[in-house]
Amino acid sequence: MASLIPKTSFRRHTVDGVLVIGGGLAGISAALAAAPTRVLLISPTHLGDGASSAWAQGGVAVAKGPDDSPDRHAEDTVKVGAGLCDLDRVALLAREGPQALQRLVDLGVPFDRGPDGAFVQGLEAAHSRARVARVKGDQAGRAIMAAAISALRAASHVTIWEGARLRRLVQTQHGRVCGAVIDRGHGPVVVLASAVVLATGGIGGLFACTTTPAEVRGEGLGMAALAGAQIRDPEFVQFHPTAMAFGRDPAPLASEALRGEGARLVDASGVPLFADGDLHPRDVVARRLHRLMQSGQRAFLDARTAIGADFPTQFPTVFAACMAEGLDPRISLIPVAPAVHYHMGGVETDAQGATTRPGLYAAGECAAVGVHGANRLASNSLLEAAVFGHRAGLAASRDTHPIGFGDIATETLAPFPDLPDQDLQKLRNTMSREVGVQRDAAGLERALVVISELEELHGQGPILAAARLIVAAALARTESRGAHFRRDHPQPHAQARSTRMTLPTRTAAFAPMEA
Ligand code: SIN
Image 1 (cartoon, rainbow, N blue to C red):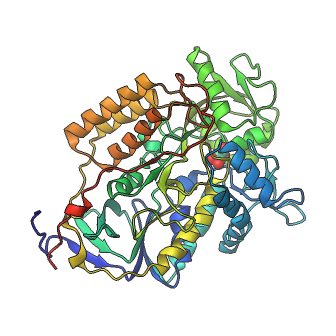
Image 2 (cartoon, rainbow, N blue to C red):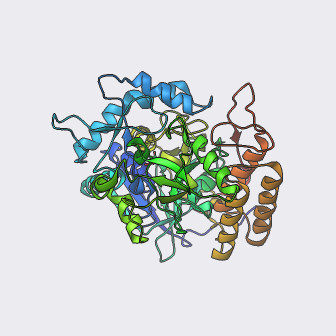
Image 3 (cartoon, protein in one colour):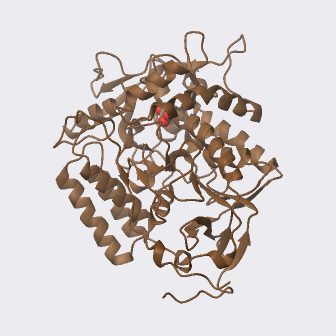
């Protein structure tokens, strides 16, 4: 039997309510929805820094126009999801979109409006209608996060710990998630809570080339899996076709909204890459660009005519990123290349955000609630974070479950090993090379060998667990579907099936902590 951990070994903190892990839009939506239940929200960085939500350029897809409806929005979402969306969840997402948008308006988000006061609605790839609510062209993520953070800071039921990193989910001897080990820079603290909402973002930083903050590297996903939660569809990683190819890590994004406004994808001689328009689903465009680049050519976005002189006001973020590289997009082509942008897979949840582990909820990019399937529709991610973050916060606030420190299983307090920077970089390069836009069995097996070697060296931790789940699922899916393309299996199977995986746990052998 494992030795008992004396009660003096860790500093302790009890939340009489919900622990929310993550300070992006999903985490903040959950925290606000939980009121008046008390919430402790932890963020590894100063709020707003290091959250993918703040980097979102597109906006929030919501059916509001006179020629639009939630049903149409749901249809577009399901079509892009390539057979793996849960229809009822997608219907929920589309139906609750207008309320979620109104909550953001109520927080003070200054969405772009026309002279009649109606939302300006942008068009993005694979939407049959223009339905993306934006802020100053490409500033939606930043503006939404600014308003959400102000509301969070003003909420009397919320305590915020910034610079606090999740080190491990804590469980009872029966496997219920009852808190977390948190590192605030001066030793671990065991935080106990009635329920935990995981809103840790995606997996971009597991790859060398990403449009997301590099610190977001699947740790939440890995922690949940190591706690025994079921993971769904981890092989589905979205590659955004138009990351700007300036050699930066992370790569700045050239929003799809540029193409919605008429910018064209061209080769080095200015010849359009798509004769039939540039707003195909992201996976289709990313593969076209990837193949072009594999043949030694380069791809560019030509916004000179479509945006031209309006660039600084219409797309200030993209404009600033180009100018910082000495490239004026009003007169020059923007070099672009596919980069990891979003994870459709994640910790499986129900419509209330509950995972398969009692006490553990998940929302936002780390979760798989079933709305994105094999490929996410543009600007559905902020929407999903707002709708299902809210739902998860409500459900977690009602999941009252008093837990004492004596209930904790000691094994769940042991910190996971860190992955040294050099080996993290090795992993990122391997993932980009072998688990990218196009995959095959040989490359995926090579990636698994690297992951096993790193596990051998450093032990199993959440980053390697997340990488393993993605690669193992990609290897097992011997078909091409949505964002997952197998060179050696280029066709889809007749029947679409979701992947569901769990990692082995030793919950039954957990030893109690000395009370
Ligand atoms: C974009 O602006 O192209 C990205 C929006 C999204 O990922 O939904």
